[in-house]
Length: 359
Image 1 (cartoon, rainbow, N blue to C red):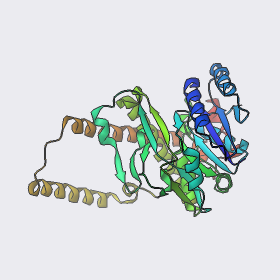
Image 2: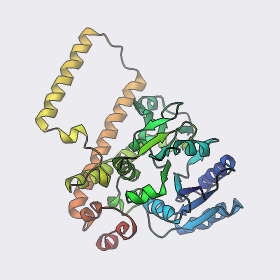
Image 3: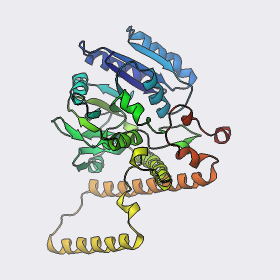
Image 4: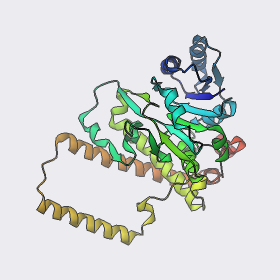
């Protein structure tokens, strides 16, 4: 077996069927592969998911029901069941595009490369609102919008920062996954949301800290479904709230003395700078902005730009609310801080504290 593809799924049999069909259409006959469907669905949905896998009529497609909750559990159990040295995580709302197998293979030709990814190409269910365009960011990693899991790093294969390898299209060497002790808690459903962590970010930070590289190939592309409800302020704020939980999780581990080898990213500038230095920086930025307005006339902001600015403010508020909510839970939920600060979350370390589970 050359390649194991792990697909976590929860309560979306129609979406799962489309995802599996795309893999069958893109499959490469020169590479032996298997597909492991990790079903974390409610019990009344599982029969439908099992039928979807059975309908593929291919023994390489395996259905594995789960008992533990959360995306991390699906990833960990998927890697444990995988028979190949290369493991890809593909979300059930992704469609693998032609050339994906070849893109993965090309990225991993170098033994120092342990992570591979490619573009997340959006397939919008409805016309995006005009303000959504202004939520994109562009930097040395390309063009991306984290809130909708969209990434375009260009048309040339190249190295990319490990933190930009996102879970919906993430390939990792199995031995490296074991070496860095796996992923972190992710998408844990209610009522255990306080145990949410930073997911695959913890994994990719540890891989980078271990000295391995991440590689991006334009051929390693997935078509990412963007339903209409995800292009709403309510959805984006909910996503930002969860990112606030991630931030608190990471900060708690940093406060416990953990570094990049434990999946803790370098602290943001805002977290590292003392208050007075931050205040002085704000004064300088305001002064510079006022001077720029005097020297360079600026055009009035469009309605879409004004709306996007308001959306960004509300996302920042939602992020802070999630962060503060989790900080309070760290003090009030028995065993939560100890859970967050575990050295890894493999095997028994993934289990929630008994007291919290009973609550």
